[in-house]
Length: 408
Image (cartoon, rainbow, N blue to C red; front, top):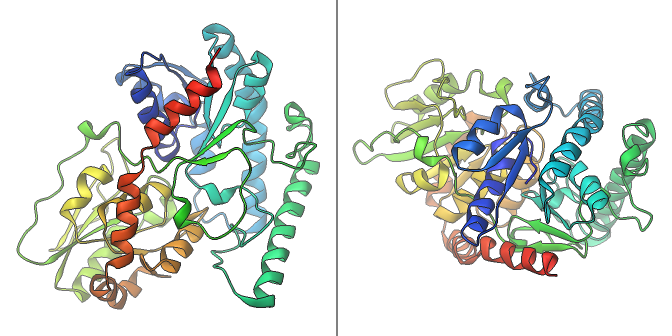
């Protein structure tokens, strides 16, 4: 099991590994130093990568401002690619020590495929944001949250977006050919498929019904979202409901420190304008060290909450559009306001609004009108998607695929 030390990427693999353990499979984790103790506390063998620079990956992901600017994005891509040779060496050493029968890796750990190919074992990619993969038909992602547009203009727009995406990736491959040497010096295989994803099995940890109409690589299997938190027993108890006011969870996930800097103050200002609602702010800090700046009379702050366990106690959610909170909110059947800031969040926001599952807001103050609208909206789509999430069985699907790939 290979994943960066980020909750949204590592936690699904921890849940899969726990299920496979009931089938007498033994999982070893390779991740950043900050999460090695978590893996071991859950009973798994764990090996760190980049042990000499423990915060190397966190420094890249936890930016001090939005990464949307082209130059900042390029610097972040360069920083990630420059880590690949070092991570590859550490992962190769771990694989030679443990001799795995298969390697299951988060999509942000593409060097796992290089090691798997060297060992001659199956390689499986897990991806909680399936739209991150390129498409040759349909609306592309990472264009600011595009939704499908009918007619010729929509077709031309989508084609231009797809062409631009591939051109930028090819340019990146040219600029960083040295860092990509292990991948043949390119982000693409000779057949045109993306080399960062397995060509044997890609577990899309989501619902195809949430996605826009488009094509997918042959290896993709939508096995369903994995939203449970394997460390939930360590979480604080959610504050108790008081009175008959609506109760709203506000969270911006585990990254985006620049966005969370004044979050509690903004929520306190929002609460003053919405007297019929109570707010709980989850700071996304599993270490328990973050409590926010201040809390108003109807605003409580907790370091973090396991979404699946906590959401039944809420009436609505204001979130950033991360994969985990998106699918936990759908599982709970709750209306939401999506306040995207960076990365893939604009694309989740587009899908949520397109399917009538919530509203997108551009600033938190928009919730003054948006939250009452979301709470009063019909729940038909929410009920349909909640049923789809609950009916999915990603762990059984994962076990079946793994059995097939390792048979014989």
